[in-house]
Image 1 (cartoon, rainbow, N blue to C red):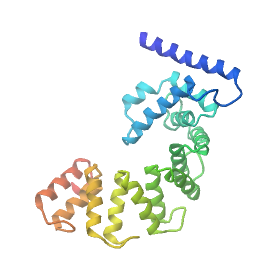
Image 2 (tube, rainbow, N blue to C red):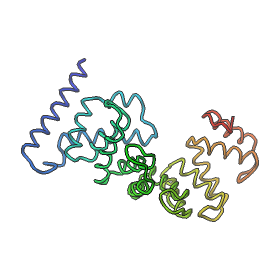
Image 3 (cartoon, rainbow, N blue to C red):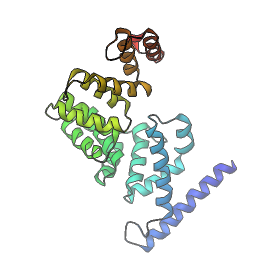
Image 4 (cartoon, rainbow, N blue to C red):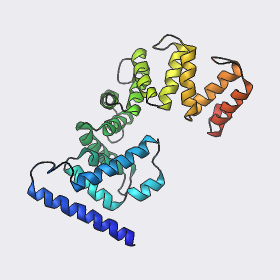
Length: 265
């Protein structure tokens, strides 16, 4: 109870300081290091760190996504702070401390995206790609994926590569697909590493290169990509791209099977 009371008082103090500042200034930020902006940036980076791991834990959501925090994000979002707009959109997108509302999520993702927030640009692209909160529009999805990809957002680079590989929202272009898979793969994106290995193996958009194919396949497998683990196991079993090695084949096939990959079971 004491901890909860302290959190509420802290949030009230931040809000009060923000409101006082708001009456004293017509500019967006009276100074760069306002208490509100500092608190929001800390929350944004905490969530960003979780997203970098590929999954946001339940413990994190329970600890950080509280109504008092959402009030801060709402205030910041309405004042035009892009990180707050992203956090507020995230609440609506996942139904965290508010009712899930895809349209409201897209509204706030768009506001942040238009200010150049790469994570919001990526999420807005996903919305258009899947038709969440907006009508499905593959060309618009590609537009926002590209904006995020140009800011080195690995997920967006991977998605843009997939769009070029499949001709989704853009004309099919295997060389362009390889370009974006490579950018994401070099940042450690496992799915992009797997796709890049397939491109090298089949000669899609690049000359065939077995060594490069195995190199990227192994990187993806070592990061836990089940499809890559299965493919690497099959490679060792048949001696394709690597020396035939039954023990290594079993090792990688088992890893894929333990993740529920049906072909390996």
